Length: 266
Image (cartoon, rainbow, N blue to C red; front, side, top):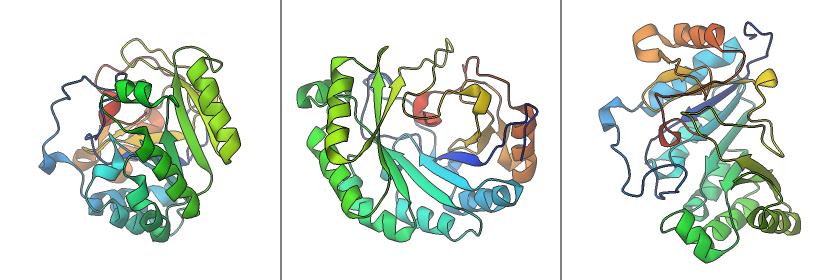
């Protein structure tokens, strides 16, 4: 399906939860945030129905995000439910990697194709500080588990302050080169000020070629990360919300004062 700017939209990013097992300094406050009540979160059956409606319209690529998607109970079952929808060609997950060692093989067997893992530094102490308590060894174990499970490619998302030649970024890049991983460098974004840029090593942030819609954990279909526009699938209907988001998709991102990274995904 094409939007008003003749961009082919075939990619749906689904945030399955606003919860996370880390407290990264650029994502949420140290003491956490007020979480959405469980009854407001989309069920797996609702998510599968969204995918089933979206595919005939042109969506064939699905990415599960959070929060941290692996903290949601029975996440493997959701991957399995999406994988059986005829027409889905690609299923991916973006994760902080902490729980990936536990789930990688199950996810691959359920139909997951690939994974993006967040890693902003190779320094264990700095990682602990950035994530406010995270253990980098669990991330390394998750990366290895993903490799052994056949998930490919494995992409590493590294948030940078300004440039991809910063010391931490260079260390992450070297780690990726030595281990057959793909590095992506993401300039630290700010939803409220509209600060973003094209991902170094990826396609995110390239408004002219954007191919994605987003679904929040509470069922809001969003045409753009940097926009307050959203359309409720429960109130409008799934197809209607998708079409509204498609036709409402802006030419380029501006600001988003309605959401945070933990409840919409990056």
